Length: 217
Image 1 (cartoon, rainbow, N blue to C red):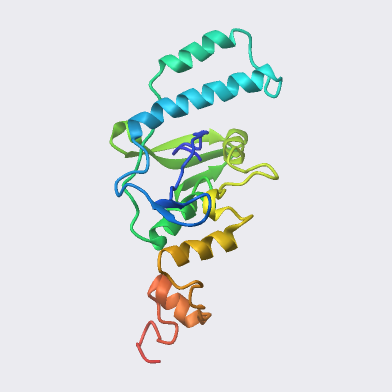
Image 2: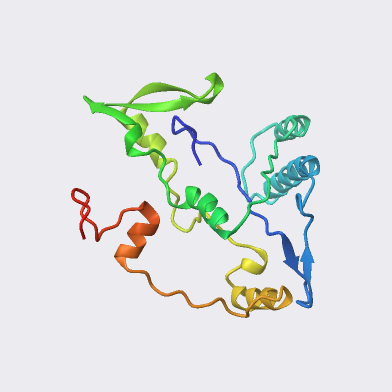
C-alpha cells in the first residue's frame, strides 16, 4: 500500500477467521473470542520466520544477498518488530468494507489533486506526525508518476489471496462443510438481482423515481 505522499509503504494485512475446520473435516475449531494469537508472540515469530526465510533464500541463490548480510540480519533481530491487531470485526459487511479499501482503490483520490501545470503536480496530504494536519506537496510530473506506478502490481501478482478453508482450490467443499458443522443452511439463499433503482437507493440514498426538484414521481 502507500502513504499519504504516495511513498511505498509495504506491509501485510491478514484477516483471520474466528476458527478453523479440522484437518479431517469432522469438526469446527472455535478461536479465542478476543484474538487468535497473542500479539506480543507474533512480533517475535514474524521476525524469526522472515529472517530465517531470507537467509535460506540467500543460501540457495534464490535471492541475491548483499555483502555483510550476517550483520544486517543481526540488526534485524535487534529491532523490535511491530504487529498491530485490530478488534474482531462484527459481520461480513465489515470485512468486505475493510478489504475493499486495498483491492478497489488507487493511490490517490481526485479530490486531493490541487493543481497540475507546467510539469508540476500539487496535492494535499495529511501529515500524521503533526496530528493529521492537512498540508500540500509539489512534485515534478516524472516523480509523481513514478510514485503512482509503485502501486501498480506486476502481472501475476495479487492484492488479495485466500488461504485455509477459503482457498479457491477446495472452497466449494470446505465452506459447505463449515456450514454443516455450524448448523447453517448448506447453501446460502439465492439472491435476487437488484434493479438500478434499488441499487441506487441502497448505496446512495437517491430515489431515481423521484424528481429532485419538485419531489413528484
